[in-house]
Length: 351
Image (cartoon, rainbow, N blue to C red):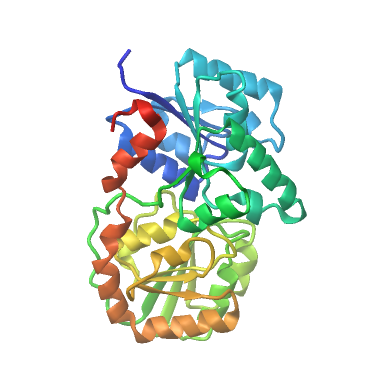
């Protein structure tokens, strides 16, 4: 057995998504320094990408309420593999990770916010979920906020003690592809995300319908319950690519547009920023942290605001592309490696 720290990453679902991509990036970033393990509720994109890790599939994670049998199975897996740190990246997985600490007090448990779904997804029960999150924080060694906006929510709405939290803003690996030499027209916009709440591609599609196919096109990458209806009513300058696992074609577009009711620090926007693409983002969550110095536009979630923002984007595309390329390195993950190791290992890291 090697002497590398044995760190488990637990996430509810393994489908293509921002938190799943974050988990994959973390494991790849740290694989030379740690012995990683993956625990999730299903066998999908993430487990199939990391099949060499022999992930634990724990279907109980998919249930709304934690099950005693699921907790005991997780406990046994952690003990059998001598895992000393558990990093949770979704709400249900976070519940299991904190509760299992009751049975393994030595376990260091890290919870990663990814937008605080207890607030934005709680509806009428938001106050109850918030209270539950506050109580679970007593079983958490460290909370990692992925944006400054999340850090404010953590402090002001969840009242988690500041000594238990840090902010490590989301980043993404440095791209290997170079930007393509695209013709100026049509301006090619990209939407990348799940076609379900809280995303609002419908507003984007409505705005794009005001332009001709010669002026502007929109490619929608992603799937979800809203796809069929959107596809049936979309104009001829909107193309649906469906779900594309490990999407890496950012260089084929002029800009990324992500319209959403709620975000932490969205991975799709980070990846686009890392490629040097201008951004058109809803002014929610931590999106404003990705836009500055002329590399993009923030909009409100109204048809008028989205249309006006697209007009601005087209009119200033050359300047925005120059600014976006100049700030691309701000989104690269590699320089933060030691920060994550220190967060996971705590005082024992020596970093």
